[in-house]
Amino acid sequence: MRPENPQNIGAVARVVRNTGLDGIDLVEPGDWRTIECWRSAWGAQEALEQARVFPGLGQALADATCVAGLSGRRDAGVPVRDVRDMAADIAGLAEDDRAALVFGPESTGLTLDELALCGHRVRIASHPQQPSLNLSHAVMVAAYEVFRAGRRKIAGTRRATGAEKEHMLDLLRQGLAATGTLPTANADGFFAEWRGLFERADLTPREVVLLEHMARKMIRGTRRDGGA
Image (cartoon, rainbow, N blue to C red):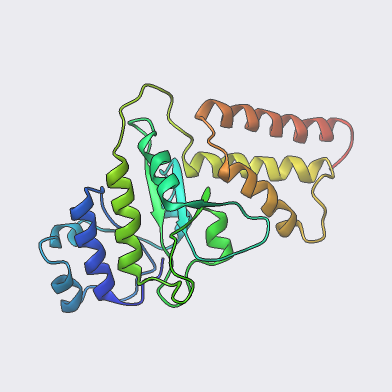
C-alpha cells in the first residue's frame, strides 16, 4: 500500500524470488519505476515487470481468499496473530486458494480502514526499544515464514474471495438497515464490527451464498411488512 521508497519495492521483488511467492501487487505506488528500484531488485527484475498495479486495496484483494495485514498497531479488542501462526494458516490452505500479505507505507503503516479489509491482523515480534521494521525487512520476515511453513496439498473447498465477501457484506448491510438493526447514526462505525467479524471468518463460497440468502430474506420480509 502506497510504498514511498522505490528501492524498497525492488528489494521486495528480490524477496519474492528468494521465497517463491507468486508476485507483487502495488496499490497507489506513485512513480516507482526508477533506476534505484531496478538496481535493488538484483536478479529479480522479472518480478517488477510482472507486478500488478491497483488504484485501491479492495481491487487488489478481490481474488484473495486469505488476507493478512501486517501491522504494529495495538488497538484494544482487536485480535492479533503472530507471523509464524499466520504462515501455518497459509500452509494449510487448499491449492486453489490465494493468500495476500498486505503491508502499509514505510512512514505510517496500514490505516484502520485498510486493516478492516484484511481478515487477520498480523504482528512481527521485535525488540521494544526498536519495534518498527523497514518495509522490505518486514516483507522478508513474513515471506520467509510462509516459505518455511511450506504449502501442504490438501483436499477441500476453497475459501470465499474478497469480491465474494464484499457482495455479501453489501447485501447484509441492506438487510440490517431494513430491519432496523443498523442505526442511522454512525452506521459506518457500527457496521465496521460486522465487517470485521466476516472478514476474519474463513467462509466458503457456499457459506457466503447462505448469508446472502439470509440478507435477501431480511430485505424482502421487511418490505412485505410495510417497513423500509
